[in-house]
Amino acid sequence: MAWRKQETHAEETKAVKDALTANGIKARVGHGKGTAWGWLEINLGSCPYPHLENVDRGNGAGFGHDRESCSACQWHERLHKKALAIAQEVTGRKGDYDGDINILSQGGVL
Image (cartoon, rainbow, N blue to C red; front, side, top):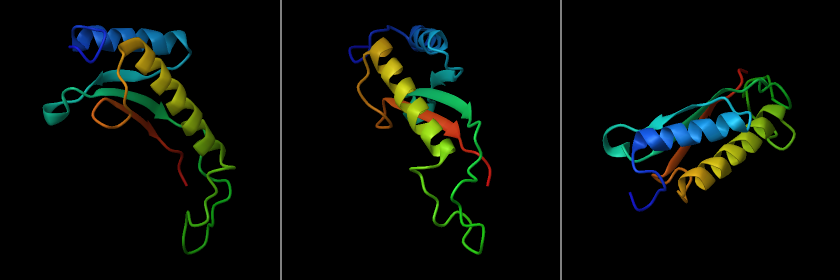
């Protein structure tokens, strides 16, 4: 395909998986189904940090959550940016969650 460096989904999946692994990132890599068949999907798994910092534990659980000082939010931000940069370099794709690259992860538990 003209918008990526690899000819097939399988080649692209392997190239991205190998590059992420070489950079110390364990992830599941694949492609969307149906109308999202062209999306590259990277699942980074679960966050090692629970969202417990700076959270209002009262009536509005989660209200007042400070993303700036939360280790879980910082982990997500850094890892998503790193994985996106690696995937873009390896594949030649340009986007993030616009039909090109979808990076997923699960947050910690409140």
